[in-house]
Image 1: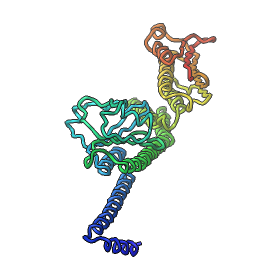
Image 2: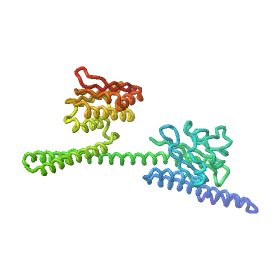
Image 3: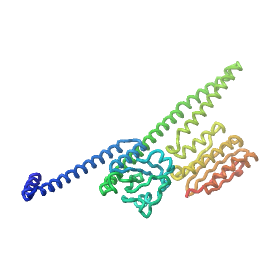
Length: 402
């Protein structure tokens, strides 16, 4: 190819009397070479940007690098990357080219309407010579910089959703088709990078939760059991002592051990997060926590897909209601047995039944039982507190799950 080009050049030059044709031909050739070199440089720049955002493990840093790289890649004065939350609104916005005073003047995230929202409803690249001339030019807050040329590309990944916005081409009147292609490729790499960072954060979160679970298990299986054994050993020595002051000190030590056990149990329950262990474990924890106050362990029955079908907000109300019911029994019912059942089907049902003396009038009309009813009503359910068929009290709490 080189020999052919040189031969053609010599032939073309020999047909020209003043060398003009040779000059034009050579200029055209070097123009092509310069264009190829420029394209190679931009591709290398794109690869460098991809490597840069792919090697970072912090989401804020990744987002900032994407915007900075995109502006440099297409010579944009302004750049922004918007990440969309589960509610369909911007949850994060990272910018380039906007100073702190402008940020303060704007004061809020743009609305995903107009041109900005097009990339979500119609996820295709959008390239405009003048964004203000677009029929849907809206969504920019007061104080937002005036922008002319515009290039927007969607960012999509397995979990990532957002848009890359670029404005005001520094070296020309508008963004080129090549600018658009480079931005699209960078956006594709960005979606993968954002997914990877989020996945790593999730894995780290799981690792932390597993560590917490292991610590909780060791506290329960080792520390509490040893403290309990020590307390029992001290109590068995009481009949052996004849000095009152020694008996007092032993009782004080046993009380302190009991309080320490309660503190450790509270720590265990905090470590055993529902997001990792499930609602069943939290129910068990609430029931087990009242065992010392009652002097016996309540009977617990769990039925249905509780962990998979009960929303978190509903679970919070369930656990608060269970705690209120058990606390009332422990402090007022003088019961010798308690049964707790939680069932999940079309509805979530909690029943707490005791064989005690019933609740005092002031408790029946107090805030505690009103709270139980209020929590059910907030979830479009119902609650009742009534006397049992054979004495005692029955708390019946139901809320729909569909």
